Every structure is written in structure tokens, then in C-alpha cells.
Image 1 (tube, rainbow, N blue to C red):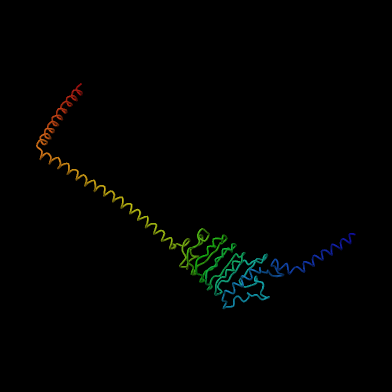
Image 2 (image 1 turned 180 degrees about the vertical axis):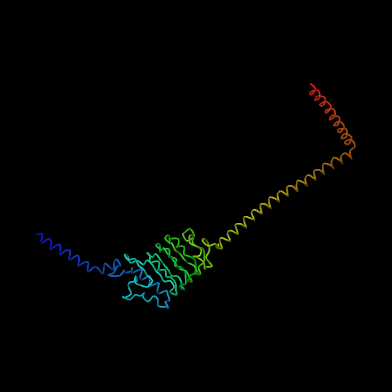
Length: 297
């Protein structure tokens, strides 16, 4: 019985082993791992081929890139490095190839890409707006090309970016704020006369206009308020002086003319002054005497 069970076990193991041998190519295609070499992900291979079509490779440096059976494994292509386990493209180095063209949007399909180096070429056009989908990107070097336009707002999603160089292009506009982009050295953005905002010292036109306008308005408000304040004060004193002058003139000449023209009023006026003088004299003498007596007692 044990012998029979042993034979059955051996047959079962042999069947499983045979099945695995037949499924090995398929498993290799599914997991993207071949017999000897790593096989790339099909959609990433297609994205790289799209990239190649947008380039003008006069030096034939990308001859290893192709759709032929012998070139199907993009992990063996020039400048491409893949993950040994998953087959995802991790790095793309095409620096100093003299390539011309632009970066296709399809590059955002390389979702596991950690390093992208396209420096030292003559690439043109704008940086893909969806470049922020490369969330695993740790190094990005697009320096010494001819990229134009503004930096994509999606770059705020590159949270793992530890190295960046965008120098010597034709980029313009504000550097996206509120991200780690402000932590890089300003030299990594130099050579782009249109770029502005932190970490660069160049202010954006709207910031300069806003500051100048705000300062101008503030100055105008302050000057206007000061002028109004001084104007009101000067007007008050002017009215006070004029009113006092007219009042004094009216009162003085009113009394004097009345005394000159009316004899009875004149006599009554002087009589009143004499009586007032006598009253003041008597009052002073009496109070002086009272005070002396108080001091003597």
C-alpha cells in the first residue's frame, strides 16, 4: 500500500513539474521575467517606442530600440534600466545623445520610473503636463535642452524628488510654489530668462505690479489723507481768524460809533466807568483792611 501511495505521489509531483515547465514561458510573460533576462512591461515598452518616434536620432544611438522580436525586451535597450523583479522601467538615461524632438505624454505611463535624465540634447516643446504622474521619480534632469513654456503644475506631486536640474532651457512663468521645488538651489533653474519666483530672486511681473500698485495706493491714501487733514485744519484757522477779525471790527466800531453819535449814551458810558472804578477802589481797600486784621490777630 505504501509502495502504491509512493508511486502516486511521484506521479503527482512529476505531473506538477511537467505542468510548470510548460507554463514557464507563460508565467514569464505574465510576471515579465524571462528565462535569463528581465522582460519589460508591454505598455511601458509601447510608451518608450512612442518616445522614440518623437525623436530624431541622427546618430542612431537608439538602434537597440525596436518592435522586432529580437528587440522586444525593452529592459535590454540602450539607456533603459528595469526592476529585476517586476520588469518596470526604473531609469531612463538619454543624456548627451544629441537627440531632437519632444517628450510625448506617454512617458507618464512609466509609473515606477525613479530617474529620468535627458540632459544635453536639443529637445524642444513643453514638459508634459502629466509628468506629475511619475510619483516615484527621485531624479529629474532636463538641463541643457530647448524646452519652453511653463513648468507643469502637476510637478507638485513629485514628493520624492531629491535631485532636479532644469537649467539652460527656455522655460518661463512662475515656479510652482508650496512644493519641494523651492528647496533646490537656484542654479538648477538658471539659464531660463523667463522663470520667476522662489527659489529665484527674480520676481514675477504680477508680483511687482501688485507691490507697486499696493505701495502706490497706500502712498496715495496716506498722502490724500494727510492733505485732507492739513486742508481741514488750515480752513478752520482761516475761518477762525476771519471771523474774529470781523467780530472785533464790528463790535469796536459799533460801540465807538454809538458813543460818538449819541451824547446821552456817551455820558452814561463814562459814568458807568467812573462808578466801576470807585467800586473797585472801595472793594480793594475794605478787603485789604480785613486781611491785615486777620494777620495781626
